[in-house]
Image 1 (cartoon, each protein chain N blue to C red):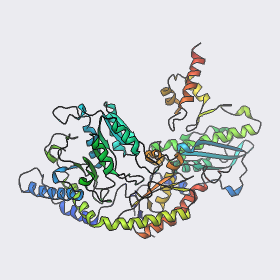
Image 2 (image 1 turned 180 degrees about the horizontal axis):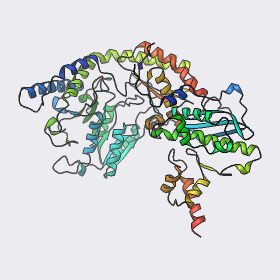
Image 3 (image 1 turned 45 degrees about the vertical axis):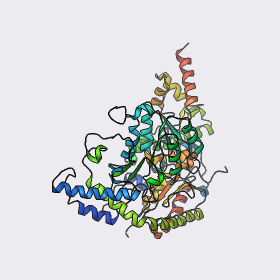
Image 4 (image 1 turned 135 degrees about the vertical axis):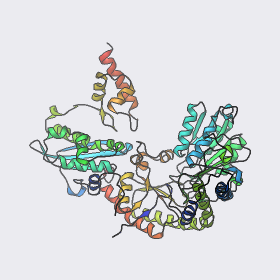
Amino acid sequence: MKKRKVYLDNNATTPLHPEVKKALIEAMEVFGNPSSMHEFGREAKALLDSAREKVSSFIGANTDEVVFVGSGSEANNTVLSMMACPSKHCCNFQSVSKKIITTKIEHPCVFEAAKCLRDRGIEVEFLDVDEYGIVNLQQYKDILSKGGVSLVSIMMANNEIGTIQDIKALCHLAHKHGALFHTDAVQAVGKIPIDVNDLNVDFLTLSAHKIYGPKGIGALYVKKGINFCPLIRGGHQEKGRRAGTENVLGIIGLGKAVEMRTKEMQGEEKRLLKFKDLLKKGIAKNIPDIRFNGHPEDCLAGTVNVSFFGAEGEAILLYLDMEGISVSTGSACSSGSLDPSHVLLATGAGAEQAHGSIRVSLGRETTEEDIKYLIDVFPKVIDKIRQMSTAYGKKDK
Amino acid sequence: MMEPNWVYTEKVKEHFMHPRNVLKDEEGFKADGEGMVGNIKCGDQMMMLIKVKDGVIVDCRWKTYGCASAIASTSVLSEMIKGMSLEKAFLLTPKEIMKQLGSLPEHKIHCSVLGDKALRAAINDYYQKNGMAGKVQKEGAKIICQCMNVTDHEIEDAVLEGARTYYELQERTKLGTVCGQCEIPAKELLEKYIKEHFNS
């Protein structure tokens, strides 16, 4: 019997959309360098322009406000790194950058880039979050009002718990105090409607492979008129903002991916919300001693994060894997580090809650049968682990 | 059809899927020695129960709050120690368990050391309970680092062997490398032993 395969790790990455795949296969014939003036170059350039058009209109930007980069991580690093640029011939941000604000629940690429800024003499404040993962507004206001903040970087939707921040309001506050605002919207773009004009952010990061596009391609929105400093120098590509011959294939894939999102996003959200509800009820009904993590409402439709007390996450993940179900965990054991999810710890979760957490992230290919299968398998797996657990069942002893 | 490689070896996978000698609450296993190490804060905890006859481990049971590596390595360990003398069992090293297991990814090896630590704790417990307290190793030792199961005696040994800073102490004993809660008491002991042995 063929083993059933249920992919529920769409926040990690997504399968290619069939239409994207088709577009990529066609585009493989195109090899020209978009910088070349001849026909081959022009052909590639035309496809690049068309993709840029799609991506920019998808987020409400102008075409010259979108910079294609190698990944969401690169986009985030680009924004943070420029705060330490000391060159008078470049943006010279360092002369004004004394302090930046970010949060305790950012993706490691922002986290680590921020720590690196600290080593370069820039003060970094990591905002606390509440039990649902919403940033502490009072603390944010207090830091801003002390002055000297040049950049705020806050993720729009959290990859682990799905919590969505009120970026528009947070951005407004930053501007009021003269700070630029960046949002890592890798998990939000293509899942919730985004209009950069409405949000009024200065920088926004997005990535193709989270929205059924190929890996190795992302984009950074840079508001017109904002000072900019490239991370990779030495080429005129992307108007000098990102050197290196363009990843034409990837960019075409990203263009097609956002085009398909325009068509499918809305209907998908409704469907996923229904599945999420079904899944949460199914878990809550069949398994005792659990806790859902993340915001109950302001949360991505496809993200469910749940902790099973007395059961360790990596063991859960691998037993589910044996049943053909792919999920992820905030347990330390899966990550190669010794610490469990920094996001869950920031929400005030205890170590056991973090080590026993599982993230189920749904996507466009998820079916009701998939969810029912998971609801069926989950209790057996958790029960098996809890039966051999030192941390479960003997609490009264 | 070729399956993509599993995270762990076939043997680890097999033991993970079908762990041997797991304690079932309902079976009422009567242990002669019981050991518990690690803590949930650090993400893993291990309990080992042994039954002893004439100085030989005749049966054992275990439980864990731990990952696949911890489950598989303790399952393998539980098979190895049946019929083994207490003295021999006490000297079992993670290396020997690993050899039985095939191999583990490098960053998972620390997950597998809990089994043999729990076993030593169980053997010590047996000695204590049976009037052989003299045989207990690290007698009277107090565990300072719960995560890596490092005692004050080991800290003293490390100082005697040359550790003078907290960093050097960590290098030798691995204490404080997981949750870090023991940093303050460990530093106090470090100072105390340095003073005791080297500053008169």
